[in-house]
Image (cartoon, rainbow, N blue to C red):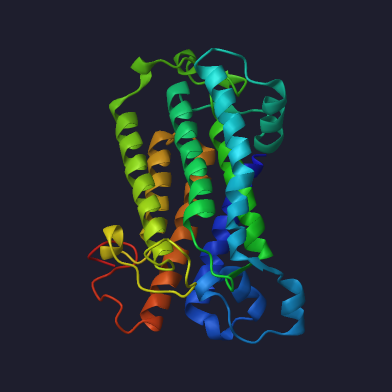
Length: 308
């Protein structure tokens, strides 16, 4: 059994079903459900029963930093292994293959080429490293911002599971491949589609960083000193068109990786999770801004510029 696919499919089902309930029946849902779906600025602020307070444990939203601190070691090592395997033609570590067999099944087949696998892992490694920088040196987390322990644990699961999803159907990390040519990485094996994906990913990657800086600067003075943790209306760059462009950028980056890994079935479950989760978060943010600010720009959309 592929436990990575199972894990992401369960998360996707939970966010679609739970998110739909929160979006339509919020007033009728118990506090412990709301607290597991809503966090940060749009977190649950109502009364909760003793049972809910015991079931749902809150942690600071600033613990987002831990996701990337945890992931950076995994991706640094994973990038090293991928480089040794595909660039220098080393054998993949046996313990890692055994781990992949355990979590993804022993009858795995390589469905992607060495080039696409290496590019995908490199791009996601860049994302993890930049997010470490963003969360530690750019973002300003509100002191009162909270999230449930459940959401925190899901965040810790996400990046390691994404790394395994890429490698579990990668050449030299499986017992068999669909084609022998797929095992070899050369610059000639990089297609025009691969180049397009790299450009698309890096375009969204950069704009996510810009959006993060814009949000952080709302809480700083001209000297860069944090003077507030209040929420304000952001302006500039993609904020001209969208409420949460940093999350839209996340969707674009994972869509780019999905184009690259379109034959990797395990990765499909990663993308459905990211897509459903980010859409729900974007909608909650958009509705929160509309309710909070009377002067919120009317032409700013939630998901698609100029349309919705």
